[in-house]
Length: 590
Ligand code: F6R
Image 1 (tube, rainbow, N blue to C red):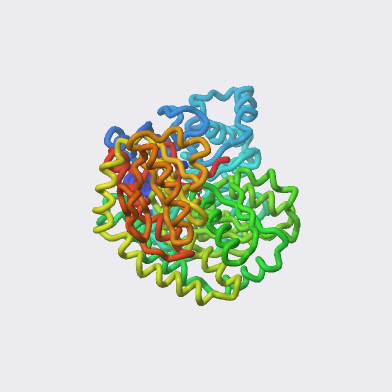
Image 2: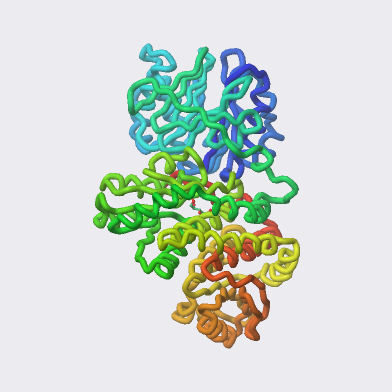
C-alpha cells in the first residue's frame, strides 16, 4: 500500500532525510516513488517508476535541499504504473504538491468540476484533484490553511495526505481512514504512514485520529474536521527500536521475523491477565460471537473456532471481513465482534467493524499496531506485542494471534494457568523449530519442490486451517500454486490433478493420525510425493519434517517449518520474499 512521509524542521538536507525514510516504507509494497522539496519558492519534484534505489540513482533525491519536503511510495490503484501517475502531484500553478495514500471516491466529479473551472490534468490518478482543489480554493482568496481544510471537506473516500505550499513554505498533513503518525524529533517533525520511517530520529509519536489536520507553522496545531475544532492528541513513546525494525544479520525480514517467534510467542503469552479476564466475561455475556479478519489473520480465527468448539464446547462464527455485510442481519447490541488484524488498518476489517457498530454490537480487537484505526475503534483491545512486522507476509504475528486466542479460550473454561503452561512448554520448543538445523533440512525439501507447478496441503481438525495458512505462505512468496484442503476433501475433485511426483504436505496430529494417513495413502497411490509434518515418521512419507506433538498448540508448532519452506522456495526461485509482487502490507482499500 502507498507510503507517505514528510519532514519540516531545522535540517537542510530534506532530500536525503526523506530518501532514508522512504526505504523504511518499502515493505508496504510499491511500484513507483518520488520526493518533493521547495527551492526558491518553487516546488522541485523528482519521481519515477521503479525501486527507490533505481529511481534515486537516476534522479538523486539527495539533491533536493531545504528543510521541508514530502515523499511517497505508490502502490497503484487508480491509473497505471507510469511516471506521470507517480506522486508527488502538483497543482496547475505548481505551488502546491501532494502525496496521498487512500482513494478519492468522488474524484471524477471533482475532476469534471475543476476542468470546468479551467484546470488541466496530467495524470490518470484520483490524487491529482487534491492539489488543484486547494489551488481552486486559494484562487477564491483563502489562505493555504483554510483552502486545504475546505478542499479536504469536499473529498469523499479515504486519505492520508501531505500538502506542501511553496509560497508560504508550509506543510499540512491530514488523515481520514488511512494511517498517519506524527513523530516529534529534536530538530523537526516527521509525519508518516508508519513509525519505522522516522524511529531513528525519535520515539515520541502521536497517533492521529480520523479527521485530524496538522498545520505545521511556528507552532504545531491539530484541527479536527469532524469535531470542527482544534484538538490535542497525546504523545506516546514507542517501545521498540530501530534494530528491531531493521534486518540485523538476516538476509531478509521474513527470515528474521520467523526466527523472532522464540520471543514473540513468549511476549504474546505474557498478556495482561486482567484484560484477558474482562474479555472472557464479555464472551460469556454475548449472544452470538463473530470473528472477522482477512488472509492470515482469518486463518488464525478459523483455528480459534476449532479450539472454541473443542475446549469450550462453544460455537463461534468466523467470517472473512469483506463478506461480513451479508451477516449484518444477525447483529444486535448483544453480539460480540472480535476483529483480528496485524496492522489494524485493513479496510475490509474496519468496514466490518463499522457495520457492527451501526448495530451497537461490542467490538473487541486483537492488533499488533498500537494506535491503529482498529485499536481506536474497538471497545477493548488485546495487543499482539510482536514488534514491527516489516516483511509483507505475516509470520510472527500469526503465531502471536494463535497463542493469544488459545490462552483466551483456556481462560474461558477456567483453565488460564493450564493454557499458559502449555504455551510455555511450546515456546521452549520454538528454538529448535527455527534453528539452523531445521533450516538445512528444509532446504533439501525446497530443492526438491522448487520447480513444482502445484503443491497441495491437507490437514484435519486443527490442522485444516494450518493447511490453508501454509498454502497461502507458499503461494504468496514463491508464486507456486498451493492449495490447502481438509483431509477428506481433496478426493472430491482436486485429486484429479495428482500426477507422478505431485507434492502433498500432510499435517499429522495424534488426534487425527489414522484418518489423515489414510488420506495420504490415497494421494500416494496416485503418484503423489508425500511430505509429512508430524511427531513421528511414517512409511507413507517420502520426506519427513519432525515437529513435536503439542496438542492444542500444534497449529503454532506446525506452521513454522512451512513458513521457512515458503521463504526458501522464494529465495531459491530468485524472488524477494519481503516484497512479493502485487501485495501490500496493509490493505487500506476495499
Ligand atoms: C498474508 C498476509 C495477508 C494479511 C491480510 C490481513 O501473509 O499478510 O493475508 O494477513 O491482508 O492483514 P491484517 O492482519 O493486517 O488485517
